[in-house]
Image (cartoon, rainbow, N blue to C red; front, top):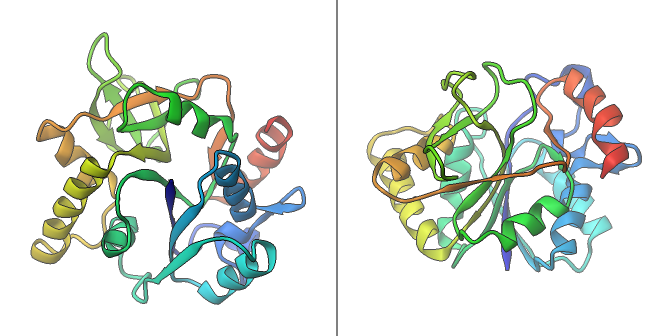
Length: 243
């Protein structure tokens, strides 16, 4: 089983919380975000990682080499990371990813049991959703069809009042889904020059075209995406002690 980790972006919103380091190397109670992510992946026996890097990529490579010397990892360098977004980084993985697996962002602190829940889901194409927190403009939100977990919309612009919850940036997809996703990304990036959008825009297109994606509620398990310095403080107090 393989995982794709997207870690090319720079830390425009982190300020002093991530000076001179990539965001994924922020340390939380003795371990970096990336260290926690890799340990979680190894916990569920994912044995191959494809990782897109960009900003301060040499520090990421050095950290992984020193802390996980036996890890089977392939790096893809996004040289124009300042001018594109995570959809572009995901598109870059198309030639080295074969089959399905886990897709996740590199700025998430989460309980490894969330990955286990994704693997036991009856749906091969699903994403983790937190349903028990207050939603605002910043979160990637999802709505679902009545009476099902099938996602009808995904994006930041969804009205929080109608949303089921926040997509936390951890997905499980089949090989068939990934093949179609790469075709969608190919068109959006190469023909339509949509290099600066979130990959959820491509998810939404696939949903509209009839490709089902299901929401998996993470329930009591803890997770948080770290975008701002206050997110780091929140994670140290409310996430790390419970995972």
